[in-house]
Image 1: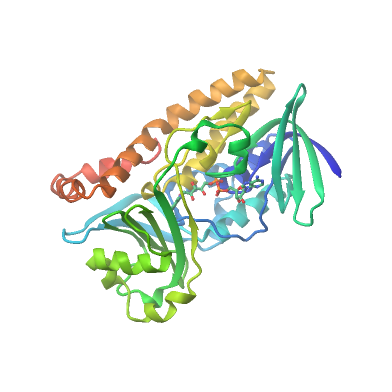
Image 2: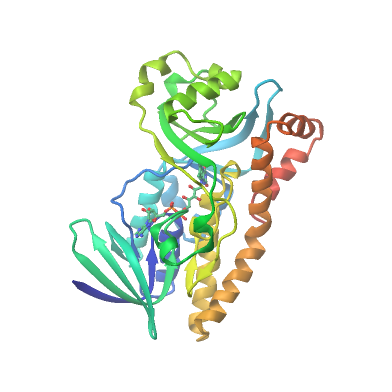
Length: 383
Ligand SMILES: Cc1cc2nc3c(=O)[nH]c(=O)nc-3n(C[C@H](O)[C@H](O)[C@H](O)COP(=O)(O)OP(=O)(O)OC[C@H]3O[C@@H](n4cnc5c(N)ncnc54)[C@H](O)[C@@H]3O)c2cc1C
């Protein structure tokens, strides 16, 4: 068994984990990341990058390199209901979209360049607290074991994980009826598709976001209530086509010939309620700290902003020799100040979108009151 020592061990090499590790490494802190999967890998995600993503990437001095990945510029949003005229808005900020396989590999590689030690593929199976800090046990793909001691742990392992159960986090027993799926589709199968627009199609018990992610592909991502949809992911596409005429008009007949070949990525039981931000002295960040309703397209932005907030608090705490409980308390205050309202607003809008009675009247109201849509967009974004 190999043994290592670090100031901070980060579990998870997604946007929250990689960006946290970069912040800490730039501040001269010895940090490692454990990532269980080989990259590039796919993640359930609409792959829209909100304005906060660009802002955070700039803070890490990586914006020029990010642009070299040729992200798609997204300049407007439209919501397409079945019967009503659509709602649309031009963004007054810079937004992009990019395949997560590309974006996450980029950030993890940048962490490595910043001096972060990456253990990959290594899954952390257990975390033990001791008087000096923590002991983590990981397992490589070939079965070899790795042991790491660290003073602090950042948990950036995403929305659901076996470690949540081991840490006895309260939300693990909560049930959710919400499942998600994503796939990529060649834009040649889409009719009159505007590559610079993110589109949201809604139907009873389901909504679907579509945006272009590069010259060839668009990402199609659904969130659906499994109580109303018992069909397989492929059948859901045709189900939403039946429920939303505009959604069916989007695809040309070529779709049928490729439906069976689509690579579909999905997750079930997505829980959007409150979670502990610090558990047994372990700092949660990104989705492990809280999942925002995806219609806000803000999860990655929040993962990166959350990392900034956590790392500023942690770096200052280490320098001032604060104990772990004080650092944890400061982090909770700062997280709530930044995210509480945003998460609640997104949850309310998601509830309306899923509510078959209120949805149409709410959309009509927003359409008739100029400025209301802009206000909603603002409330689901950062400051
Ligand atoms: C349907 C849906 C659509 C969405 N669409 C968008 C969108 O368009 N735009 C947007 O900004 N957000 C979107 N999101 C949210 C976004 O995907 C997440 O907020 C974001 O991925 C959070 O990043 P993260 O780093 O916290 O977690 P993740 O991206 O999940 O990364 C966690 C990493 O940890 C690794 N890991 C897990 N457990 C272990 C372990 N024990 N040991 C080692 N490694 C481990 C995983 O392999 C993974 O790489 C969407 C979410 C859903 C559900």
